[in-house]
Length: 291
Ligand SMILES: NC(=O)c1ccc[n+]([C@@H]2O[C@H](COP(=O)([O-])OP(=O)(O)OC[C@H]3O[C@@H](n4cnc5c(N)ncnc54)[C@H](OP(=O)(O)O)[C@@H]3O)[C@@H](O)[C@H]2O)c1
Image (cartoon, rainbow, N blue to C red; front, side):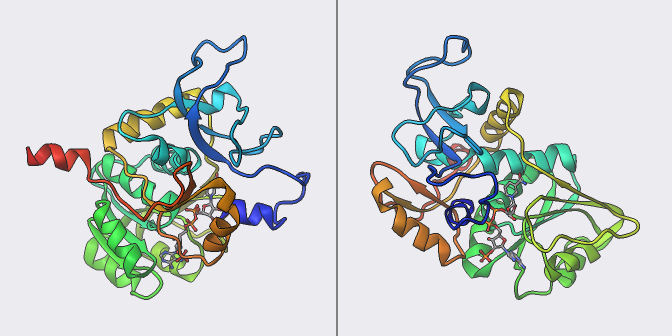
């Protein structure tokens, strides 16, 4: 949606049109700068290119600062890694840095079937949390169940507070939110005294401060260390990056029309192969555990 809003001029302040869209991508390094030692030509990498004055990933070649580039994790392919950078950094930093989620904590991931939420849910589970996921629609609920939520509800229609009380009778420890509004308020109502909540800047409307709980907002941040931590967590979690639909670059108009309709379950990606159906690969962990 970021690309759709950027194209529509929503963030026009400070942006000069025409511009090349695309904050995230993956590929093979064609050349590196003279000072770059960590990466070399031919490496398979993914990258974050937000606010890149040289343009984004709707292109065959893109120049990206080396600090915003990382090797593709062993457990992901090029297509899935292409959609990882922004949502992965934002999800992991919410779980680890802003909220410091600990084993055994009861966590609501609100908006868990959205792009950042579907990864945050997996990282919260990696840290040993018990996760109640609020998703959008029955397809969203199905996705978050498959991604490992201990409990899942449709956050637009079901009673969040009642579900939270059943899930954690002594109260919820943590809320990590990727959607704002009155349902988020209901999630916050489920927090125990001394509980904590966080959301990335951008959700609308933002929650109000309230007594007895700590609410923080944050931004996902790239950097060499940040990518190293992300890659470790991706591999440990055997993370899934669900793909909703794939398009060829020359089909960008169709891709934007699809995104404008809303309610996308998974990432919309561009690839040379173009059209790909929604898919979730079998987890390597469950394949291993079947052996
Ligand atoms: N500051 C940062 O660094 C940063 C980085 C990334 C993202 N963000 C912000 O974080 C937010 C999430 O980003 P995203 O890319 O994950 O967006 P997204 O894919 O649109 O995810 C939001 C999800 O919440 C769902 N939702 C809305 N109301 C709900 C409810 N009551 N119960 C359950 N689910 C509900 C939406 O479903 P429907 O689509 O069906 O309505 C959607 O799946 C956005 O506001 C974005 O601007 C900030």
